[in-house]
Length: 400
Image (tube, rainbow, N blue to C red):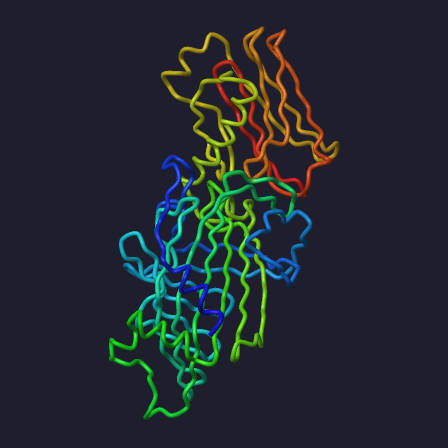
């Protein structure tokens, strides 16, 4: 078939790694965890010209439809339950492999597992594998799928639906190209064949070149630094019958940074990355004003100042800070007491870690007030951080 030629040419796969210090997807930061339930909202647009080139989703609308992906671990087996489809994955060293898919009367078992992710994943890397699966449809028809799964990773800036920009985002682009054969005759079926030759690379390539029905599935996932699950995910499926496209389905999902930062179970590794990014943004604008270690966690229900015993005893002045949200006046009010002439700095970040506002002043007296209007902020959760001479205070609030 004509569609096969570019796949055969492309499948001379190699991994080309960029700078090892750049952001990459890893098992520790991006492998699903037992009990996690990320919520995906359906994006209100259907057709994509080329999803791999869409990095700006600021103009999209989010529908009221929300789907939860539930993850469960059993040893080295990961089970995903998403939108009526149960997918079983196997974890072998640094690879995540698809072993079984059950959905709406269809059951597919992968005799030759499909490579889904190979960690670590860095920008400009490419990998892939042949896959072969057999199973049933509606318990009386027998299904075989075989093909090639390829993945390419590239880096860019993603603008999410609320308009915030996320830097150092990795786009993981996966293309599954395969053939589908359906057989109603059980006695002559190929279902769960023990013949290893049928799942060899040469055999799979023969099926791709000769079977009459083929499909192409494209999945794009945008991963942002500090978040375990993709922020945006798009899926496009197209079927071919004797080289003619007969079906095309597209859908897109949005798993907001706010949801991942606050609705999932504690994720210390990613929380540390988000806070480090926020600190770097602050220091690039103010310098190292407050060289203190914060004991705060972005996902805690409350925040407290640094209470390191050795550090607290060295304070020459009592430093205190009170941060409140006045919902009547739509203001954040900050009252502080500190050593005179110290620099007081304030930052406001959204849940994606983007800097929304910053200011600083010199404390002429031992006490001071700073206020910031919040009526122009979009709905969501925000983090206010106040840096005094020897301590740091944080406060999170929800703008409704």
